[in-house]
Image 1: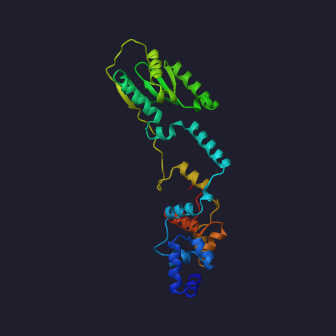
Image 2: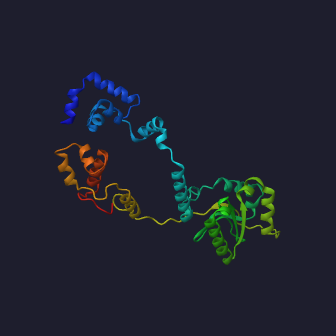
Image 3: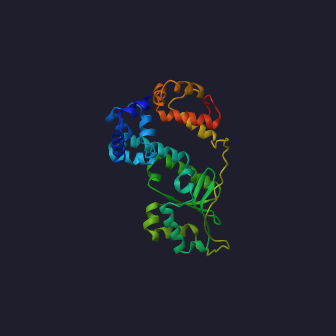
Length: 295
C-alpha cells in the first residue's frame, strides 16, 4: 500500500529528478529525508531499481562525504593495537608473512646477504623451521644453528622478551646454537653480520652435499565444515556477532509481513529491513525455520 501511495504522489518528472540526484551522490537516506518518504523499499526497489549502488560503491561514497565519521579516536586506535598485538603473540604462525610463506623485508635482506656471501652454496638453510611451539627464522639444519632476526619489539616488550628466552632455552636444550641479530644490522651492516655469523659457524671449511635456501612446508589440519561450508569456529563467531540473539522464526516473520512492510518488521526487532531479508534467506538456505543457536 505504501508503495502505491508514493507512485501517486510523485510525477514521472519528479521521479526522474530524484534518480538523477541519487546518481549525483545523494544516499537513499538523504532522499527519504529530503522528500519525506517513509518507505525505504519503494525508493530502493522501485524508484531506483537497476541503479542502486552495491555495498562497495556505497562505502566509497560514504567515506568521501563523511570522512570524519570513519576516523578512529586515539583511544580506539590504542585498543585496536593492543588486540592485534595480543593476537599476534598468541598466534605467531598467523602473521601475514608466515601465513603465506612470504618473507618479511628484513628476512628478504638476510636472504640476499646469504646469497651474495655464498652461504647458500655451503649449507642447507631452512626458513620458518618448526620447533614446536616455535618457528626458527633461519635454520642451518646440518650444523643446528638458529638465526633469529629481532625487531624493536624483541627488546621493548616484556612478553616478547619472555617468549624469546623460552625459545632460546628450548633450542639450547635440543642442541641448537642461537644467533640473534637486530633487524637494523641485517638491513644496514652486513660487515658486522658476517663477522657474527662466521664466528659462530667457525672456520672448519665444511661444505655439505645438500645446500640452498628453502621454506618449510606448513602442515595444516583440515577444518571440518558442515554442508553450508561453516566450521564450528565460524558458527560460534557468527552467533556472537548477532545483534538479535533470539531471532523470530520464519513463520513469525512471514506472518508479520502480511500486515506490515519489511522496514516495520525490522524496527520491531531493532534491525534494518536488510537484516530481516538475510534472516529469511538463511532460513531457506539451511532449511531451518526456527533459529539455530549453533549457526
